[in-house]
Image 1 (cartoon, one colour):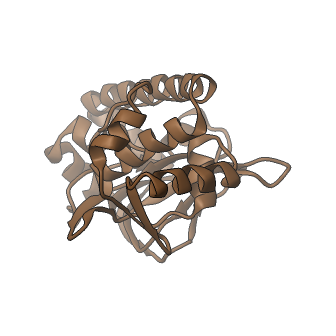
Image 2 (tube, helix red, strand yellow):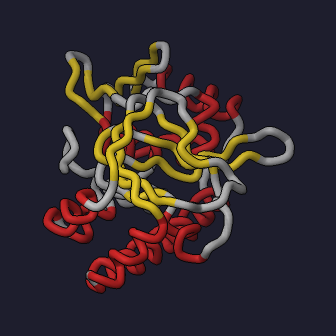
Length: 236
């Protein structure tokens, strides 16, 4: 089973290869989800994993104050919920769909059995999880060492690289994110994101519309983000 869109760079599917991905998805059952639907909730028992065939989701945690941190966004070709299945502990985060999403559900038992049957997939999964941990460390350094506007510029470049489409006036970012969601993704307040976007608009770098953003001067955005080390293929 294959998604309607190609895999997001840096995904599990990209790491294990198409043949093993097809084999894994053949072991589960297809699921369809609407926009803003909870796939996992923090603290829930882990009874299955999801393989994202098409669509986008956000991984979040909510502080007691109500602040929602967006830990990551995952797309076609990614695996969700594997850590809790492997360590047998409850879900460590919430996962919400950003739009219509197609996935394949594998029970925890079947997923673990698949890893035993094909050890190369298990090794790839370990490497994949380790890579996420390294990137999480980089994000913490990024938040400590760079301004919110610099972090916003780097985040928008990631979005453009993964979800951008050519528009008459520039590169339109296809994933619709609110200012609060952007704030949660870069570790800033919504007010800081609003100020950053206003700065980018005033400098003629971006155009903003309701839940849509167009980058009209990517070279200027790159210059603003030049001090922030990031991989354009890293899942946001």
